[in-house]
Amino acid sequence: MGLASSLKKVSKKTLMKFGGDITIKRTTQSAYNSADGSVVKSQTSVTVKGFLEGVTSREVNDLVSQDDKKVMVSAGAITFIPTTKDKVIISSIEYKIIQIDKEQQNNIDILYIIYLRA
Image (cartoon, rainbow, N blue to C red; front, side):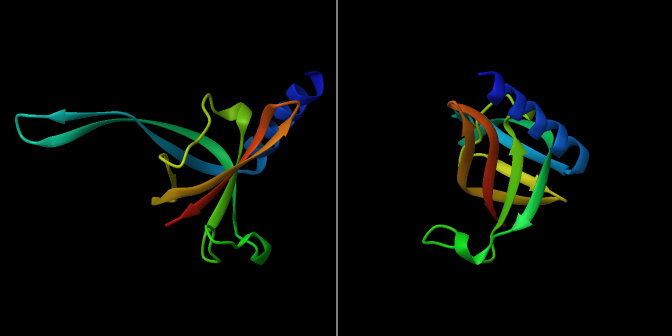
């Protein structure tokens, strides 16, 4: 457990120093308003540091396309595990999450690699 927590701290410090601001927007609840027929969503947002880059040709598959982006976020910077239902905002552009890969040590999340599509 000591190595995993140390790696988690190192990834957080590195991304805090070299990463750019990204916002992860999570819809936590939805409710139907019967008075006007609308759906009301409760959203929470967290801004963290991440490293954005393009997808390489080896990462392209049935799900990920060449025009997609990926962002690396330290697991120590957020209190939840991102899902494909969340959205990511970078430089006022809202991306949907296509896929999430986790880098782990002893079953402890160190880094999230989030594949994005505009």
